[in-house]
Length: 184
Image (cartoon, rainbow, N blue to C red; front, side):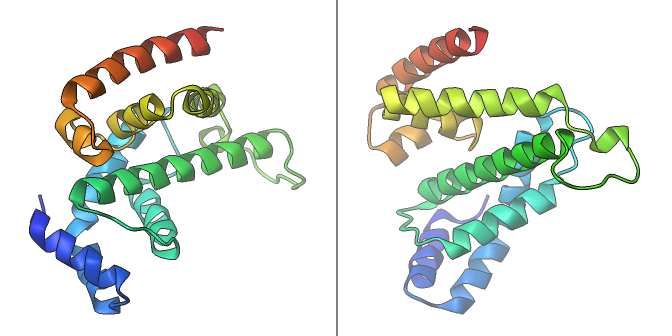
């Protein structure tokens, strides 16, 4: 795990426009981001065409293009996880569009590249999270940070500036809400 204080210094320097700080930050967090990506992809369908390295790179590009204001290590990794989720949603949508024709002529068919029900399931989960966010934004954020970022309860509490029991309640409610929404 990278040194938390050093990461915060590098984040602040990057935000201030120091391009070298961006490169040092990338080197410092790259392996942790790959672990997050592998963990996230492990929950996906088998034969996923998006590899952890590609997921990290795409999320990193989105973070670099954004105008983020990271407070600390936990906030940085929470942001990275949300960008990874966004990449996965875009990837699933593109695969489903290809499955439905996508306006392209397909010359060969490779079962490993064909869209699956898992893509539709992932999009259903994304839609359910969006609905949960409109009803209870904090609970949706707790679910995202738990399952997409892999943050621990105390890290989530720190990022959201709430207590650990508040995180626990949100997790219980969010899991129940999602089970009901996805069963419908």
